[in-house]
Length: 269
Image (tube, rainbow, N blue to C red; front, top):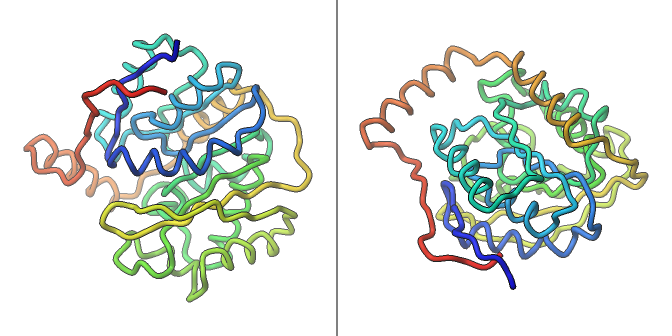
């Protein structure tokens, strides 16, 4: 009998998660693997993978900034409620500093959905030029045999933060990805899996980047320990600290722009 679970949406509508999962799930082809979910929010993808692949190890990396810690709490509650043991949560900041030596703790798969365009925006090393974005991206890709990667489309001008357009430099996203890999001398296959609606901001393309010469992953525990150790050293800029303070204040007053939404019906995993 299929176990049912009450999905947590996090700060996005359920459909946004479900549509992306439909594109991703068919590419998880091994029963046993190590999977890193960068910016895991309230754990929708992490719990889905951990539940559907009980022999896998899932590492969820989330500092709780977007949801003021509520997403992390909901994620932990879900793991407890459904007795999921193969999902490690790392409560940590991450960014270009984290990716610099990520190749030393390579995973089988990593999920980078609407995360990379926030890199260097007040957390750790700031990215200012195309070459710096390329380096951070290549460092990230080297950290996993397969990367599921999503960033705002080049045509969606209302997307934030706008700094990633310095990386795009007028180019289409796929061109940016392929150029960065070439600059980093990374031989990999780039496949566009599809395009999904991202709320009112437009659509985003999802890419699968597979390194040609895959290697055996290290343990999930080693990956989690590495991410946690680097995260403890990441410096938050005064500008970002102020924005976080204002955001927390608005949240306490019930005026925050990000809301945690739960689905009240049981949905089959």
